[in-house]
Length: 222
Image (cartoon, one colour):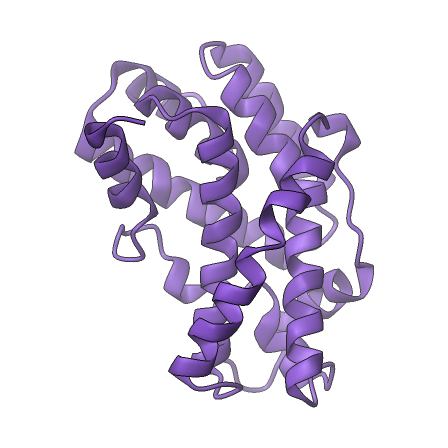
């Protein structure tokens, strides 16, 4: 990776890049309110389960979209397939919202013709699909793309845990540093999967997040 590629990676993966990540907790808020987290060990277990779900379900879409980023028809198929594959309507809605924000921001910032054209044809704009496409078009290698995707999810959950007053900011950084070490293994185990292999490993988190809309009081969109 040369210096320009690194700088592009830092910009795209920066928490200040306006894709609305701060509005989402990846289901953590619902898990907290439904009593799934009663200790720091529970929090760690839930974060790991969320990362495993991301690796087994979302990462195959990232990888396939990356490899087929040049094929607009195939990306549309992937986007539609992602939409019907998510049983959790809260996660489905959040994915589409984040994906649209990612695509809209990148189109305005980078102004790649391929992405401008794609933005006119995608119906749902799911985040995992758009992430793979964007990082491919920008020129990142696949491994960097997969790692950045997983790292971004971890950062979002950790940030949400702080805002939900489950941990302090220093402890959050310690946990994030510790859990970064499991990301390469999650990527390795899901590296060769296609969208047809996408699955959820921890359904209880999926069910919990599905009830996010009925929470009496909530801080996050999902």
